[in-house]
Amino acid sequence: MRFAFFLLLAASPLAALAQVTPAGSTTPPTPPTAASAQEPLRRPVEEAHNWSLHFQQTFIDQWHNNLTTPYAGDYSLADRESAKLSFTSTFFIGRRLWKNAAVYFNPEVAGGSGLSSARGIAGFPNGETFRIGLADPVLYLARLYVRQVFAIGAETDVDVDDLNQVAGPTPRHYVALNLGKMSVADFFDQNSYSHDPRTQFMNWSLMSAGAWDYAANTRGYTVGGVLEYVTPDFSLRFGSTLLPTYANGPLLDYRYGKAHAETLELTKTYHLAKRQGTLRVLGFRNVAPMATYRSAILLAQLDGGRPDLETMRHDGHTKVGFSLNAEQEIAKNVGLFARVSYNDGQNETWAFTEIDHSASLGVVSTGARWNRPDDRLGAAVVVNGISPEHQAYLAAGGYGFIIGDGRLNYGLEKIGEVYYSIDLHRYHAAISPDYQFILNPAYNKDRSGPVHVVAVRLHVEF
Image (cartoon, rainbow, N blue to C red; front, side, top):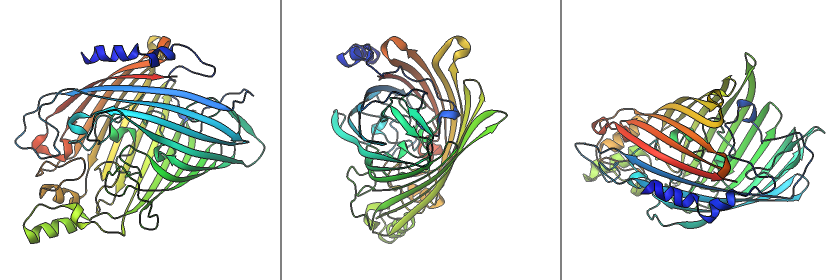
């Protein structure tokens, strides 16, 4: 029934629009090589546009096997549940304002639900769903920001028409300022092979550095600014943005002096055996009214209750961390990627997911070797962990905002994911079967499963 629902949606008016090729539209892109990872897509033409109009729609239907576990908590992955469908629809509207400046506006609709209401696994298997109680479709503003580029030198390239990118000449060496509502993941922790759950790996800890508690509200967006210094083979980016009012909250905290997030990233391209690669080093610092795991445990020991982070929150707590992110082309149309990330794990997770250290490795290939150049095949593994203080909090019966089994027999959370994206060129779409194998969900060896997660994703873009 659910796959039939996919087909019905593909035949909807939105999908029908996708069959008409408007000026400047492209088919879903093949996975970029490391050469395209650092800067926007470009081509050697002189054409300039004043508008950029694009649309995407993504449906993910996910199911996991029945589990037999000795106990469960309020935030455990359910032992038995029906398959869950999620979807997002986004318009990407860009308008050139003046030379080297543009404004971008993205209204978005999201609905549906993740497995167990997006709880029970720290590296959650669906990057397109949110921790929202209601499954009803909701319209909201995803992005509204202004981008101004200041040229350094006379050399230019030409940006192609793309998502949140107006076509036209652009400097090769520049400083750029981005201000407004945005996703910090649009600017930081990029990776050609593993960054977009709509077209690549779906797992949260593969789409981004797992231990990077990046500034965002429940739906993944924030308000602030990002300053970029970019050259053809080197870039430096700094962002200062808002955090939510409480952990995983939908509203942003505008008390900037008491709640804010800073992110700094250095990107360097290089060549290894004439194959290009990219290395990114990221550091972050979050300041928010977080509670410490230790204080929550101490209070619970005094009153004999369950530790609760909410009762111990107060201003002035800081979380810091870093990530290393590498990608390397190893053959034509084949690339490797890896990430390692860490945060101090003393204070509660505030925005992304409950991972204090993470390491991932994967490989992606196009289908060129079997005459399907626009198809993609990807395989990856990721291992997630938490700090001793975080472990003690969960073992004492505490809950975060995504995991909590009531007790804990700690073990590293281990995940493998394989997907194959089948290009449907005629419909400006791709359909992707996906499989994930999960051991020790929420770091609990007592509920080790294993969990087998099977999914089908339909992505339309034009």
